[in-house]
Image (cartoon, rainbow, N blue to C red; front, side, top):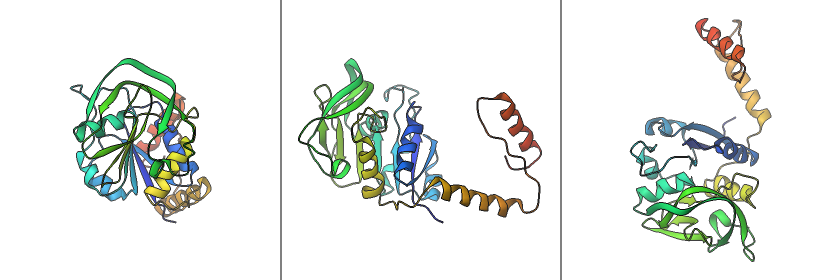
Length: 245
């Protein structure tokens, strides 16, 4: 079975795996890749959407992780979260600055545009969201409009005027953010147009079939990566013996 997919470019956030989990909970296939994945490889993956994760870096630092800017010209939806938001702002001539006070914890989000990412979310009251950042976007990037704000972050969420580009200062993937799952579902299903046909069981069946086609009647040793040094050693051994691990 073919699955529509969303890929995450990882910039070192502690929440990256959680973003992927939330997307998969919406029955959409999701993969995590390094932030510097080559543009041609991204094209070959044919994702329906791209998520730029958060991360501990400052976008103005000399060694700041930066993705290939070509991702913004692929014509597919892109969602930046926290550091990903600041990357989008930097690329599109917004202003990112060190916040006077690092914001970590719950904050009240006021939705200015109840559509797109926030479709179906009650806007009569503020939404509790989880912030974790030392920098913030002071001025929205060019051709983007503000779609949500907090008292401490006047630019808490933005959307491009004509392209399917979105960005959030807060973390929708954590349990502390109200309707975070809904926001990520809105992005992956409604905005990206992904079919909700992925389940762990289907994935296992597909991968087993691929392994059988590749291995044939040969013997296979499978080593699972984990904290145990023995398993890592087993994987190395498998690789040396040219069997699948």
